[in-house]
Image 1 (cartoon, rainbow, N blue to C red):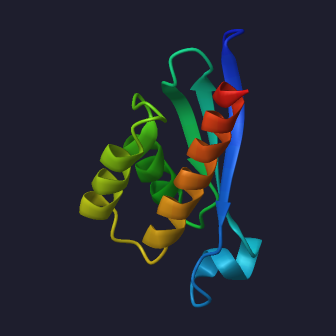
Image 2 (cartoon, rainbow, N blue to C red):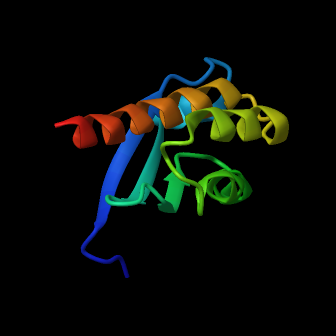
Amino acid sequence: MFDQDSIYIVGEAKSPSNNPITEQYKVFFIGFVVDRLSGKIIDAEATSILSITSSFIRHLFVGKNIRETAQIVKAIEEKYYGSSQKAVIVAFRHASQKFNQLHSV
């Protein structure tokens, strides 16, 4: 399914205490499959209660470049109005930092 240049990165964040994600998982995670050479996000999945949430989060990331942090954060702020919006942003930034650290070595 994924080629040899694919890598898996997980970003994590705390979700709001009143969020069902916090009740079930304690921490919010987004897993990203990224092309190690181009930075293109191939797939993404988030811890969520509703499947539509994970599908929408996937829509926000797939096909984008993990290095384009500002553009992706702007899209999240403009399109995602779930109670875990800040957690989505923090988890993405966390994963993006991990990716950038891999490429600075």
